[in-house]
Image (cartoon, rainbow, N blue to C red; front, top):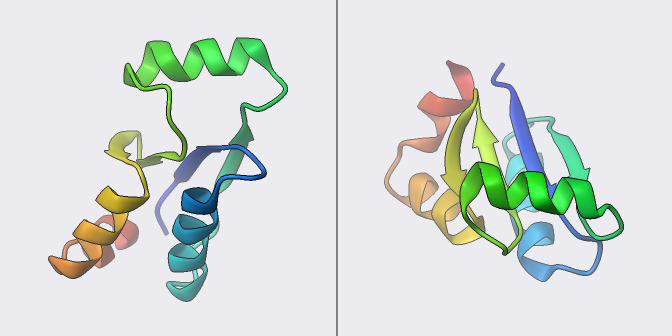
Length: 84
């Protein structure tokens, strides 16, 4: 199974949406809550050049946010990434 890391905040509806898709796929992930940790927020911005959440990584590859995750699903490419 793939190594999935997701940067999130507790009140983010897009984070919930991304988590729901991963749950449907039976995938577990490591969640990094950046809402109360300034150092993690800085690390997120340095790693992705993005300030928004979620930011999702699959096997170290930056996927992007929730919309990007769903786009991979619609294109039929998500399952291959999750089983690699």
